[in-house]
Every structure is written in structure tokens, then in C-alpha cells.
Amino acid sequence: MSTLAAIETATKEYSDRRELLILLVEDLHTGIEALKRGRLPAIKDAAAAAANAKGALEAVIDDSRPLFIKPRSIIISGIQVGLRKGTGGLEYDEEAAVIRRIRKQLSEEQQDLLIKKIEKLIKKTLAQLDVATLKKLGVTVQGTGDVVLIKPVNSDVDKIVTAMLKEASGEVDELDDMETE
Image (cartoon, rainbow, N blue to C red; front, side, top):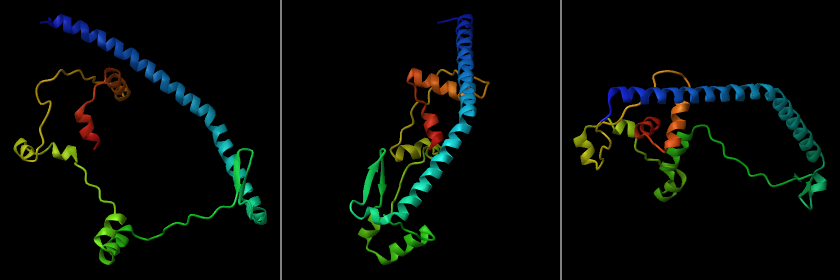
């Protein structure tokens, strides 16, 4: 068994290495943000210019419909241009009202094809049930014994660092999985 002094030394080593990791991640984020700020105006300008050029191309093609009877499209400069059959689209005011009408007017077989039914356990709520009820449901509770605790108590970058450390160690925390569902 280790002494408290050995634990203190190992904790200090971990803390120092973690602080270095935090500094590197913060530096990375600062660099990424600076790069974004520097390039974003040019990207916005290029996107606007591309959208304008596409609009002009659409107008030219629309005005030249007789050129696209046969063939309906051609490839120029790596871009396919011409005409194609529209795919159409469905419109309805309220999804729930359409679902009610489907249930009322169509067979159960057709309903199953038209309406998506999703059933999924909500782990966070399920975890709040007592052990006896969970046992009746065929659910076992894992990892309720004592486990080693190493939890930082500072910094906004902690989530990123923790995720990186988990990824590096291959660790998956079931409680985190429960919270996200």
C-alpha cells in the first residue's frame, strides 16, 4: 500500500501534466479562432460570389431551355448543366393532423409504412428506478462499488481535456452516456 506522500507526489505529477495539456489545448483553440477570424471574410466573399455566379448560370440556362431538349444536360468545366425532371415535394400544415388522418383512413399495414414509430429507453430516467423494479425489468446495475476518483475542479477547458484523456486511455464513462440520452 502506498503512503499519502506517494499519492500526493503522483497527484502533483498528474496535475502538472494536465496543466500542460490545458495550455496546449487553449493555445490550439486560440490559433484556430485567429485563423477563422483571418480567413472568414474571404470565405464569406467567395461564398457570396459563388452564389451570385450560380444564380446567373441558372438564369442563362432557364433562358436557353431549347438548347437542352436532347441531350437534357451537358458537362462543362466539370459542372453538369441543363434541365432535369423536378422531384416535387410534399406540403402539409400540421404533421400531427396528417398522422391522425392516416390512422383514420388507411389500413394498419399502410400506417406502419407511413408513420415512423421510435421506442428508445431513457437511461437517465431508468436509472432513477429502485433496484427491485430494475431487476423485474431485467436491468442490472453495474459499477456501483467504490471506484477511484480523479476529478479536476477548475477551468472551462476541462471538458475537452477530460474527453482527450478518456480517448487516450480508451475509457468510456457510462454516467456520461446516461446524461446524453
